[in-house]
Structures are given as structure tokens and as C-alpha cells.
Length: 115
Length: 109
Image 1: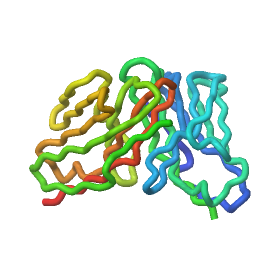
Image 2: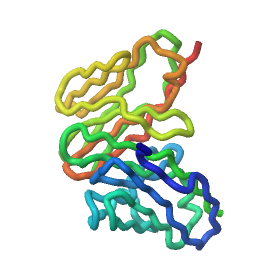
Image 3: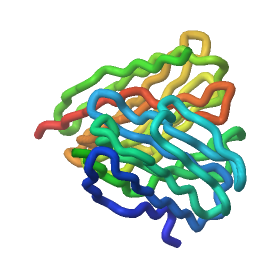
Image 4: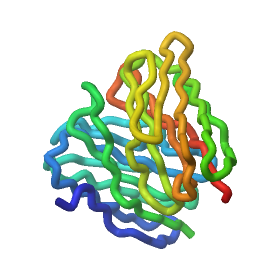
């Protein structure tokens, strides 16, 4: 059981380049989400999905796109990278988000630097 | 809007007890979570409170008062490995789980 797998672990981009952070989970979780973590800012929600075909915006969605074509995968796309997107990105999933103590399981994180 | 406040840093001595506070203001309330995050690693789940009162789990306990918008995480018999950041997170009326900025705890021998 791999849990939540994120790739790549590290990436350096130049301003204006595009890239996709991959996230896959093998726990049959309905809910998936992307957070970014910056010093002094804590974890901030970018986008989330409550099931295949359904996505919604979090606190800081600008500059990022997501899609959820399967239950297992939830990629995060940066269409034109900016230095302000330098951060550590975490993908997290749970069975559902609304009922009970549905605990988020986090991936190991992806450290992105935009020059 | 939503607001979650925690102290930025705390220090304590090995073997001691430390209490990390969290106050929140959210649109609705559907549970409060505490996560632990060691430097360079992913957050891991510690505790969940949805009703008022104390939840105990080994050396860790978490308390909730919904009327006061207040929670604390109590760590007993501190060990060096407890040096980490502790994140308070609240689920309001939506599907979103919103995190505070975290409290960095340093345990000294």
C-alpha cells in the first residue's frame, strides 16, 4: 500500500515555464486536495476535489489548474510559473471530507523553486 | 472569513508538560484536527475533536470548547523526538480543511 505518492520531489523552473505536479493515491479515497506551505504562512489550500469529475477552489487557487478524471489521480498544473509560486506543495486525500474524523493522509511533498 | 491562531514558537524541557493553544473563528464547525510535522516531512495526524471535552491518546491529549472557539494540545513526558511543528486545523461548513500557521516546539535536554 503506497498511500499518497507525489512526483517530482524537487523541481527548479524558470519564470514562465509550465509543469505538472503529479499526485496518486491507492486507498480509494474520494477526497483529494493540494496545499502549499510557505514559512510563516502555514498550509494553504489551493484546490480540492470531492470525487472524480468534481473540483473546486481553495484559499489560493490563482495560477493553478487541476482536474480529476479518475479517483486515483489529482494533478496540479502551473501554466506559467512565477517566483511567488516557489513553495513546498503537499497533496492529501481522505475517504470523504464531510463526515466524522476523516483524516487527511499527506504525500511526502514536492519542493518547487521558480527562478 | 476564517481565522485560526496559534503561538509561533514554544520551548520546553525533556520530561516536562507543554500545552499548545489554538483559537479559531470559522463559518460553522465540523471538527478540529491536530497534526504533527517534523522538519522536512509531511504532516501526520495526531487527534480529532468534534464535541466539547478532552480526548486522550497516550502522552497526547486534545481539548475542545466550541463555545469559546478554543482548543489545546497537551503533550506529557516530553521527549526529544517531540520537537516538531504542531498544526491546528478546522473544518467549517464546507469541504475545506483550513490550517493555522503552526506552532514550532523545541524540546531541550
